[in-house]
Amino acid sequence: MKATFKRPKTKKGWLSFSSIVIVILLGSWPVIHLFNKEVIIFGFPLLMLWSMILIFLTTFIMIVINKVGGVD
Image (cartoon, rainbow, N blue to C red):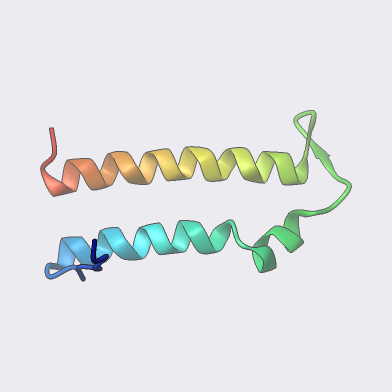
């Protein structure tokens, strides 16, 4: 099976794609290195708190993409 990548054609598609790429970059090594400190916030290590924020941010962006894309 040939794997292909379809590029977005609309402004909404590019906005959705770029928001997903931003979330992926926020979870990559250069950003994670900034949060890998021995700091406790709300009883959580800073890196764990950042991971939880990324999970909620990813969920929120997927909900927005579904609303913008017209998926019910």
